[in-house]
Length: 190
Image (cartoon, rainbow, N blue to C red; front, side, top):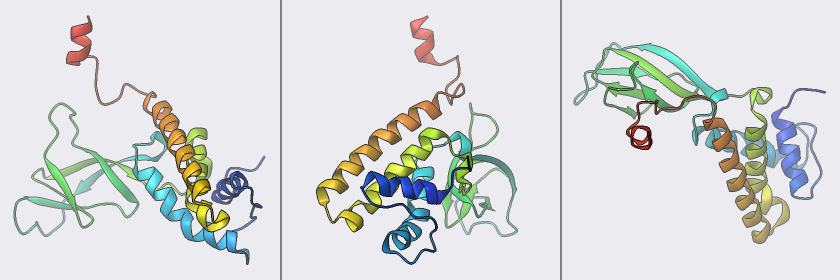
């Protein structure tokens, strides 16, 4: 069985809408052009919405040669594939203050330890629930252009929201998470 591709995800979205599948984004059909135009936006929005385990990256950034004009001591150019900075710093107990501005990470620390959500373009690396969320996300985006039905668009948006909740829940359960065992909530329960 071939690896999952963005074309397969889009084809499955079209099937949810009762339409025909596509074999390529380059087909000379309206459905293929719609999929080609919408795919990057839908994929990036879904990836940016959550720290998906499959899309997380760690990097140590060196400070840029030019510091910000004011407020911060250092700026760091973010990687080109960065969709969202998730955490900054090595120690979760005392993270530095920071902000993102125009593709730069700004802060007062001289070294940028960054965890970020990257633009994962290899659909074969998506978890099964993330693929399902992307499929329903594409179906929601394609619903009105394909079916001309606001009711169908609303139904696909609800399906997408349900798939996103399931995918985020499962993804978030793989690891100890941001909150360790010394949490005040756990101490109260004990």
